[in-house]
Image (cartoon, rainbow, N blue to C red):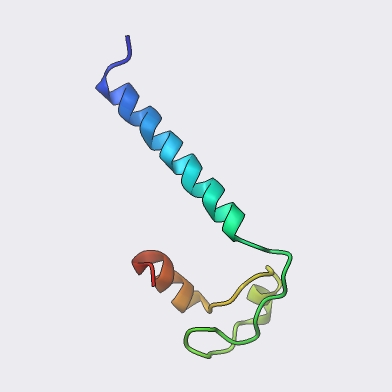
Length: 69
């Protein structure tokens, strides 16, 4: 019989998978990246632009992911 830890672990795994699936659905790596960050206007390095679908510099993307803005 599963205990509370097993159920919590299963729930965490399911939530993580849903979050990853949602992120993949929102990401469009087939579109061209922006040359300048949509938030601060700084140049996005060419190596980062090659990823495709990039709209923010590393600092702004990090802040966006951390704070949701």
